Image 1 (cartoon, one colour):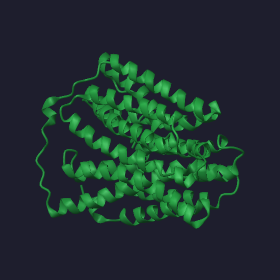
Image 2 (cartoon, helix red, strand yellow; image 1 turned 120 degrees about the horizontal axis):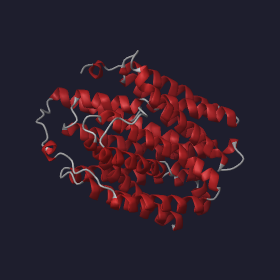
Image 3 (cartoon, helix red, strand yellow; image 1 turned 90 degrees about the vertical axis):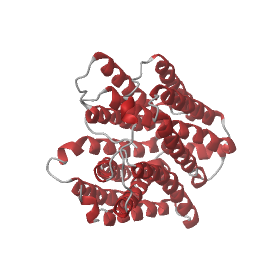
Image 4 (tube, helix red, strand yellow; image 1 turned 120 degrees about the vertical axis):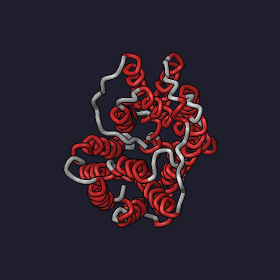
Length: 388
């Protein structure tokens, strides 16, 4: 998931600055691909003459494949060959989105898995490549990079609304990501510090394993809620709007406030603790998702989605900080935590659709993210998470 806040480019040498700017542009495109299913879900369901809840199973294929790609990327990056990972990941994104443009329902799952797998390979590779290119400004550079991902997430529904045609939208995304892949072939990518490949020794004692289990579950819930609400916003808002294209403004509100909250987080953390920010965000998200359930009319839907995004936004970056501080970035348990995040994205969004279908009420599935947020709120009070 994107974790970022600062929007200022740190001072770097020319080569590092050029690569960082290029990587940010590429992340805008990958942000569009990552969030593509959310605004297009109602249109895809109509195209294939299936229930929207059934189309929601595509979230599973995207995020399960993304998790597998992330794990594979880790093995690839152990050799610090960032460029191969970036090229392979982006090529799979181009192939997957292009295949989705021409696929039927049976082929769609493979197409979505293809670009999901590509995202799982490319996103970690670009994050680490930017960090290696800016050794004296790692945090600021990676924050800028993931802020760019958020721009893509906001731009995705806006682009669909502007084209007003599903086929044109999918082919346009295929084209621009393809251009990004071609540019990647000629872009100089840092090799990385091979001395950093040595994994620090860690003791997986009972305390560490308990912490890892708690953090993994938190990752599972945060990523699951983020994608459950962001993924289903347009589909659930559709009855309140004139068309599936205007319903995408629910996605714009969610991702816009989501990104804004991450931009504000560094200033908020100067006056409150990380855990306090996390808890406050969860409460705001609960209010937003609950309001979404009862919302009647476009204005209330947009307000509700905005509140949900505002609350959910800061949670994952804070959690990444907790994982780094409590487990260490080279601890194998930290890798498992991130894998659970991907599994949350694969599990919760399809569950929203299943609950809605079984209840016979479209918004009934919002009970899933509400319950998950309540569980997050209770778990955030665990004292173990306070200790560094």
